[in-house]
Length: 193
Image (cartoon, rainbow, N blue to C red; front, top):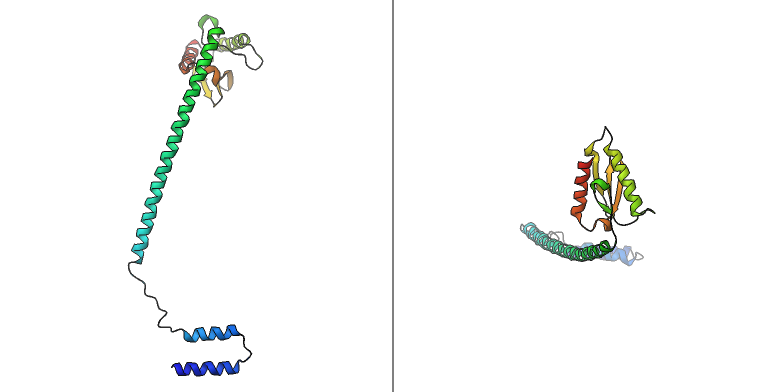
């Protein structure tokens, strides 16, 4: 058989004297290959090996995810600690200012809360008077719906609302003194309306 191949190769080379070297190389590579040797045997356990490798990778990914979650929780706790220190300093600063600055009561007969700072170009006295007038006007309405009074909070401002109307807005620095006072003010406002 090899003799026949060699003969065919020689014959082709004589006929194709001007054929490029690439064609000659291709013919030689085809003739050298044996179709019986090119058959690959598939191992039966190759799927189980792949499966075990994938399971190992999955387990490593789960451990990595758990480590990342733990790191995120530690970062959150560090942020909370920094925020609590900042909040404590703010409360201390506000407490020191409140000993010097008298608060202006809102609804003088039955004080709901005190205003200490000016806002929007209005002094605390003007703000207290305006809010008192709004609250008293709401209290005299016959169609008052007390369940329509609510607090709407964002990161910076907390608004005391009646329906779609803003009664008063508080900045977080104004309400930092005591969150319980804010809830007490809401309770008092409900009972006063």
